[in-house]
Length: 234
Image: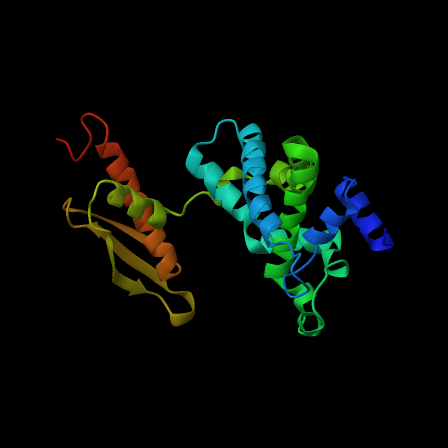
């Protein structure tokens, strides 16, 4: 077997009994008919399931929304691209001459697909346990070091979802005041939920920061209103 493929297998911690399966996982459709798209399709599903399991273990106190956001970050193209580069996949991809000349070996989408195909190939030959073990080796460190709070929704997003879940119109933001010199301004923004007849204000060094603060205050008010005796129920 090609020395580069030997090195790759050492890096992923799995040795293929069927070298042709590994080769197919690394073959772009531009190279030939026996390409990796079906394996990529399978690997995408296996990766999602394996990451979900790892997150379930790691963040036992987190809800579905938090876990979903972290998973989406881990399986998005740029994250897979970084892992593929660390494994040296550009050196072992099989591409047509035209695709190679066009920089295909460095293209994030091609590398992300090849990584998923590699996971799919591992599943085909070794079963889910081997594929999950591979995903754990590739993603275990970022999962272990990530902070669930860093992937929390921002206040504006959470407020909009809170209102939409109750079939209420989205909030409206308007600048109430701008104070200070141009290089050090403070913005005051009002967030209003017209259907509920309530509004809250926030301040910040930028319009976005002020909107987030106003949205956070609105959320606090609305969540309190969901409890018996809340301010909107009296």
